[in-house]
Image (cartoon, rainbow, N blue to C red; front, side, top):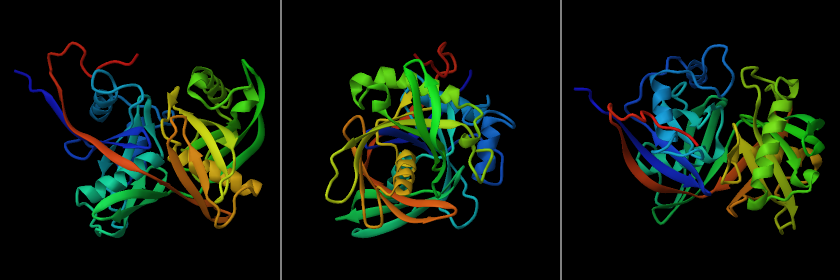
Amino acid sequence: MKAPVVVRAVDFHTAGEPFRIVADGLPPAPGDTVAERWATVIGAGGAPNAPRPGPLDDVRRLLVQEPRGHAGMYGGFIVPPDDDGAHFGVLFWHKDGYSTACGHGTIALGAWAVATGRVPAPDDGTAEVRIDVPSGRVTARVHRAGARTTAVTFRGVPARVTARKLPVTTSRGAAEVSVAHAGACYVSLAAAEFDLDVSRTSLPQLTDLAREIREELTGHRATVDPENPLLAGVYGVIFHEALADTSAGPNQRSVTVFADGQIDRSPCGSGTAARLALLAEDGAIGPGDELRHESVTGTVFTGRVLSRSARGTVTEVTGATHRTGEHTFVLDPYDELATGFLL
């Protein structure tokens, strides 16, 4: 008799965007670093973010596809860190494969690491969780009050701008976009370029446009990370609109459409870092200022620019995350749907 496959996961949401964490019982991903393991799971010479068939990807599909997941699911596999300088590593995944960075996931992982005792934390104060991801080492500062996590601040790799006013052609006309790398490649443009706003009613049109823009920029040199050619290709398209400034600084609403038409329910952590780099280059945000960044669902991240140098813009993004459940998923070996499906 065949034995069922059992996978245990802990789920969080960060500003509305799900994050499913699997820490134990995973098939191995060969490599000495997280970046090498990521390269293994996408396949040597394969397209960035694309999956490579194998036992680990079977687990990804089991967790992200229906009936156990859904097309908007996101998560991470816990793997060893590159060295003793980090607490652990992570391979981020979504419905289409794997990503090189995930700010909302890093925020959730910080809270998870403290809640599970992997990283000690005070009842009142801050604990720093260091995490190795495919694009580098990131940190999550977990803020605590009354023995409860109240917020998490994510600091990613330096964000670098690689293009401004880059022309693109779409079915709704021409537009100019900016490109910034913040652990992954993000294209930014105002929704008003297409006479649209950032709202739920505009999501179908924005999703179609994001797919077109991503296809249009395939292979463009601006989509290649300046320091790591393996990190290439548009990961997310950010449509933004300006709101009235707050007393602390700029105020924007945006939606990030990433991978193949997946809509970020949060303001997008790494995408917020990319927006901060562009705003800093424009002189729209400076030392001491704070970006209020609102998602299409109404949730909010706050972002700050810490420093700028030839290597890029160092940013911090703060948001709230909450545990939503602990799950034991089972794949019956006789289940005709196997790891599931996506609609």
